[in-house]
Image (cartoon, rainbow, N blue to C red; front, side, top):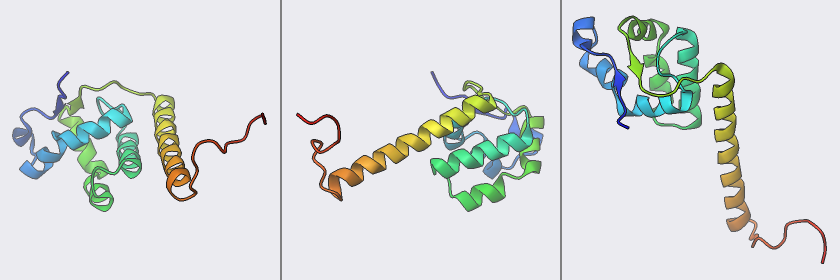
Length: 130
């Protein structure tokens, strides 16, 4: 399924080309897949979810995103009918997804460390002795 994201007729709704590159862009769509946000219901929660998802899975420069994603700008997106064709997560589902991603990252880094730094070959884990 194609990713459909953004604001239609954005220039007529007061968006600059730079703003539309962001609101209608693939990168924001990828973040929406993490946040489970297909539409903006709560402006503050939308902002926090986007910033947190980008913090965990950096796709944009964090400081720039923080400065760009103001409450006023997100309200402008909401008023213009911004949407993205991704499933919508409740707060609980979002938190679960973030925890899953954090653990997955941790597990990957830990196993990488075991293999390369500690010289672990996979046969040294605890368990019953033979």
